[in-house]
Length: 427
Ligand code: NIG
Ligand code: FE
Image (tube, rainbow, N blue to C red):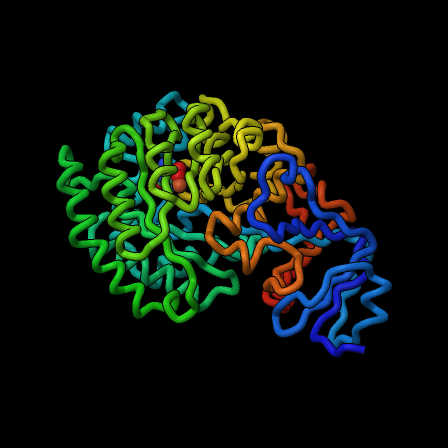
């Protein structure tokens, strides 16, 4: 008998999302990697074995056992695109949109991202840590065990560094794994109104060196965690040439790259991003088929953000089926932010994607686990129930993983296990 820390046994099924050879593409996305009558052996925070419950109970003696009681297991969810740190809210703009204003009109009139910038600049680091912690707690309760967080509401060097320090503090204190992304090029701040070029120079020449220096002495350098640069490639934000210069400068500084692209207008940024070698391209609501083909020829994940499309209304969802059929490793994320997606729930994102983007529950689950892990360059550490992976595990309230997407508006997650420790039990 092998001695281990934890055995989770008697699960009706484990949706392992196993993918030993890289992200799931095409038909592989419809395979949840099901094991029936399943158990999970965990030691030192890692998965030792996943398999038949009776076989594992005979093989291991565990210091602690959890009887999953006929419920389903799945990997901890990975939210690979969020703006969880911000000051204030945008509930006023929510009403304006109901009355007919568009997201782009509000942004062009000086609201939107720049309005959150004002609140975020004024907020103390302590206040930002506290409000973001509450959001992360909600995300954890809904099954997210790894969360990417972007800057982009400072929009000057001091403000962006303040956001990075807040993100670092969250990484030190919160049970979720946190992945930082520098999004200095999220919007042109009022000081540079009409001078996006000048602001791009500030991002490249002043902010990026400061970000690189911060990273060297941050907790993320200690853990070898990835760190990203991102840009909002869109009308009234940054054009393709500006986006390319910023992402290339970030790559040259040792960051990995992401892009907000094709949310409202297809400007050609997606093929540029594919050429540069981004780790993920996100939004993709209006992407052109030839540019999706260019993305499919790379290693990058394609990340629709259906909660943002749902929240803003008014236009079609990203063609997630087309992304799968053309061979892009599809991932999904909440995009949690105060403007386009005030939503902490990956189960709700899955619910929307199944109904409006015609994903099967297995495709939605793989998109929120193993493929989302690859969208953060963490596919070798998290995102599936496989031997050697970090033991981030959910016990669901039902015995069939499909309830994650079928049931909506509530919480289908019962228990959250992070690095082999029980961290959350929902009533
Ligand atoms: O991903 N589109 C750009 N950025 C965010 C929105 C941020 C905001 O509105 O504050 C997004 O949707
Ligand atoms: Fe975003």
